[in-house]
Image (cartoon, rainbow, N blue to C red):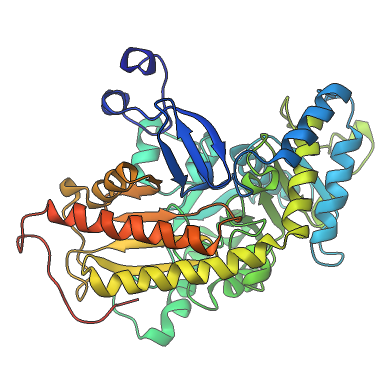
Length: 459
């Protein structure tokens, strides 16, 4: 097996290390997956936040199979298809009132964010504001792996291998209430971060800024929940300066946070919304860019005007993916899985906070619905992190895998995002495995040398 896995590259993984202990999955059922050696694991990350309806879902598989027999590909440069139109009707029916009018379908999250930024730039050029080209985004954000998406991302390790990147991308402070870059009164956190955004806009020049793209919950930043008032504040700043607000809801939509859209949860709606992952339950590559009538109108004209959107992808609006998307959304709505995500997310958070009382290494527990982050700290009082070389989060992840739980980890962070179908008993099983894994990981750390216990949960 080691020789075979060296012939591929797993995303973001050093294959030398991966080949020493490979994970090769073969099947799945519900919230569990099975590897090539017959070991079963709870899929604590829904694949990559997309297998929201669990594995082995017959309704989604049957929808895809039926469409394969009917029409597998519709030439995207000269035609659309009935399944794409049906899916767009479904999506617009879920969104508020007459706020959005046009949707362009793609086949992945990076395609969606990349093209959302292209739409923003082209919109300004076609509405008399050709100097607006810059894109604002946050440090520690992740918006995908294509060129402009990487440029908008905010982690040095993911950007540096490809620099110099495209110009015109400006980064903002991550709106992290747990790790402010300087001391601020608790009630002023949102306003402080907003003032930093406003100053950036002023110093860059509002007439040069096309859009601001952000995840409503910054997953790769560590499941950062912006302070209350921050997202509405961004909306107001963008309106004031003629900047389009783009929400990257690739992860956060379709029930993941306990509501159909994070925009609904935070009562802030963008000009452009990027959707994906859970939209197809992970059963087909599918994503979407949703836009307001004002934006869509700028692309409507005679062929000789050349105002059409000048971009596309071979598998965008693929009829098989769209048929699966229709079935997946119906399943979420009919089974009220957004409500289950809210309920089970509360149960998961409560259990993690109980674990925080027992494990001094848990500095912070945060999240919404079934997107939950655990930040590990050496000293909970000062919020000092463990030395990076200890890779504490990776240690916990390894121990969890040995016990049958797959989760995401960095050296200072754990992330859980199980399928929206998870039950009470399964949440409790996740919590029990994680508790044991924390014990085992911490037992491998020299007692007293790197861990400082302090009172209180710090949640």
